[in-house]
Amino acid sequence: MNNYNTKFKYCQLNARLLVVDKAYQREIQQDRVKRIVANFNPALVNPIKVSHRDGRYYVFDGQHTLASLRMQNHSPSLMVDCKVYEGLTQEDEARLFAEQNGISRAVESIAKFKALYAAGDVDVVEMVRLVECSGFYMDFSKSKKINRITAVAKTYKVFKAVSSSDFIEILSLIKESWEGIPESLNTEIIGGMYLFYKTYKGEYKRKTLVTQLSKVSPAIIIREGKAFSNGGDARFARQILNIYNKNLRTNRLDDKI
Image (cartoon, rainbow, N blue to C red; front, side):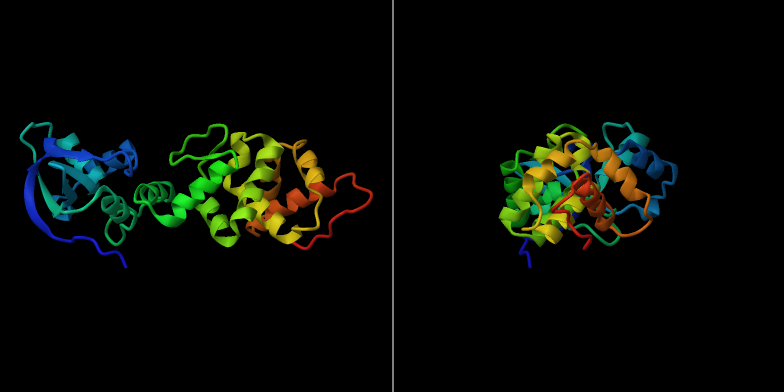
C-alpha cells in the first residue's frame, strides 16, 4: 500500500496558475476536449486534483477538464474548482495519476507506464533498463520510430513472465531479425516471439531463426496471423514457426503452439 500525504483542501484557483508536469502526464487530446465542451454540464464537473509543490500548482487529474474550461472561457480571471494536495512529491503525483480509476477517465497503457516510470516504479524502471540492454528504447508516446518500443503493456507482460536473461534474448531476436524497424516492435510480434521462445527454448537454432525471419517482413507475419480470428499470441507465434521451418529438410520443429 502506498503511503501518500493525503492532506488536501477544496478551493478555487485562477486557471493561469495551473500547470501540467510533462514528465508523467499524457498529451492533451483535443478531440476529447471538444467532446467535453459539446456535452458540457457544470453539475457533472469534478474538482481538478492539484498538487501544491515548490510554489506551483500541478494538475495530476483533470487536465482535459481544465482544457475544456479554458476553451469555453478565455477570461484571464477564470477561476477553477480544485482539490489541492500538499506535501506530494513529483513521484507521488505520477503514481496517483497512474492509479486513477472510478469516475476519472481510465488512464491508457502508455500514459500509465510513463507515469509509473516517472514515479520510480521498480518493475517499470527495470523493464526500461533491460529494453535498453537489448538495443531498444521504451517510447512512452505513440510515435513509430526505429528501435522505439511503444507496445508498452505487451512488453511489460513479457517482462513479468520470464527471467531477465530470457527477456533480453526475446528482444534481441527481434532486433537481429529486423534491425529495429517499427513494424517489428508491434504488440503482435513481441507477443508472438515470446510464445515461440517459450515453446521452443533449447530446441531451435538461433542463427536459423534470425536468418529465416530476416527474409520476411513483420507486417506479413501480422497480416497472416490476423487472418485467424482467435488464438492471441499463438496466431503470430505459429507464423514464426512456419517461417523457421520453411525449406528445412531436417531439424524442423513440431507444432506445439
